[in-house]
Length: 550
Image 1: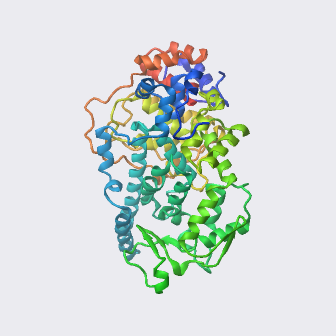
Image 2 (image 1 turned 90 degrees about the vertical axis):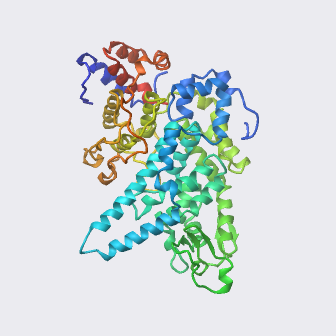
Image 3 (image 1 turned 135 degrees about the vertical axis):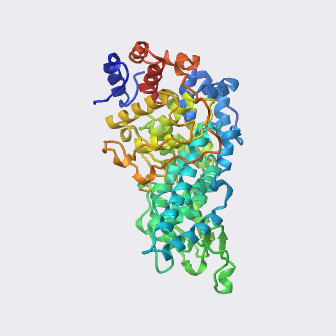
């Protein structure tokens, strides 16, 4: 591969070797949720930075201090059972100032609908209101992405934040459809976060009832005598049992009948219907179960009869799906792929699936089985980072203890690497394996990002940074998905004033980082020792094969 560098010419050949190594498959080198803390990780003497790189979005001195205070096994237990995390005051202030934090989803969507209707009245004469409406949708989408990145960077509950992204990806909703940009912040906040380490059935139900999912997969148009199977198919194929889970097309059709009547209603008033139907009408926020639109006939799903009686059918079916061995296997395999290996063993998946079924879908209990496995311990340092992991790990390490007031560069870096938050167009979510992200083009972009971060003040600490060129304008490269140009926007004004002297990276002077670097491969250490400035050392460290893995 060819990569252009502005560092010392003498380092170029070595850097190319290091970057080429990033795309290798790996570097060469049963409790229940409320049970006692094991000592598995302590006995294994796992390297703290490697364990932290797997349990968190990226190891840094702050997370090391938290781990050392209680030991690795107790730290894991705390991550699996998180308490409310107190964010730095300046970060919390940014989140509190957001529209999505101050306005309920029903009020927000009613306001937006009024703006949309007003723009429709001007259609053909003045395009101003339509543009303003679209800009507001994008602004709200950016708020949701910014809130996620701030929590990922600063929250002490790092495993919860990783699981928050994992489930947002599992129950993927693309932000480009209709007005979903305005709903995604609430979807994450109300449907995903409260259940990210809880019971899978509760998580599944929360996603089914959220208007963002009902709109994305067209179930708001699913009604008796006008069946739309789209959501039913994805609910079985992508959300629960998996494509080879043993269900049939007839099961999909019957599930679609169960889902009839589940939709969205912006009105505050109950629609007119027969008195007997009013008794089973349900309205929660924007979600509506409309009995006149529901198919009340009996259904046959996975060999079980579901008596037609309204919303109660849904809970019966979700319980049925969440307790299927195929669901336990599918979810366990996906978790193991995310946290352990692109090819986790059948033995590990079977053990996790068994725990999933025995605990009635307890996500934390399933994860505990995985984290205490020898396969997980042996995998530390070998799992290739997707773009989000790479970017967050670099920022968390380089600017630990500093207050980011502008996530614009972070959002643009994700666009450049092809993993924009909520940017996956298909409902399957982003790939979790190395081959999706280890192309030469991806490595080139990552090195450019490493240089930007290592150079100091890459726009994270001021609000007037111009946006990077749209990713869609860049040549397509294997393993990358260019984000739509419209999604790369100028940074929003933060709640804080920019710092007079933005913090400078101090990786080369950090005892933690220097100690960590001594465990790198001889090839990486040789290149680091050849650097002539702290900035060069920072860039080489962030672009090293070891920083590409977790």
